[in-house]
Amino acid sequence: MEKKIIKEFLNSWKEGVIEIGSAYQKGGNFTDVAEIFIEKHYAFSEANVLFKPTYTSETIFRNNKADAISYFIKGNISEDKGFALKPWETIELDEVNFLLEDNFTASMGTFLFKPLNEDEVTKVAFTFVFTKINNSLKIKVHHSSPVF
Image 1 (cartoon, rainbow, N blue to C red):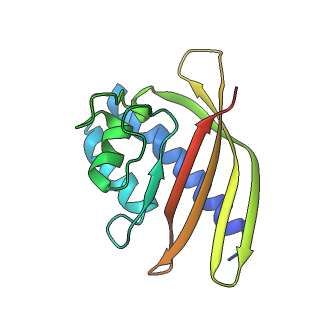
Image 2: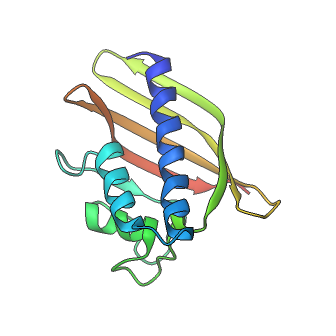
């Protein structure tokens, strides 16, 4: 696995989060956009996934597709506010580190999330462990938390 492929994946992930919020702002079908985003970036349909989103306190882990979608767009979990619905104007990859081994691929880094029409930026640390399914990279483990 090359670093370039992982960086392309991370760019696709952040663009996907922005696209969900944009569809929501425009009155589009943001639910379908979120479904496509989850299907493209997470291995829920093919394997078990461990997902600890950035802002959770009651239901800490979202280890199935329905709960992951709830986190991104407000769903069946009451604490969910719709992380992707903020919406985010930009998400910048600030730092990224890689583990590239024969049968193991992971990245850890930080994203800078800037809400639409706001100046304050939120720094979030992430760890993604990847799996390859049908020549596509997907997240098998996602852990993220705000950096204060």
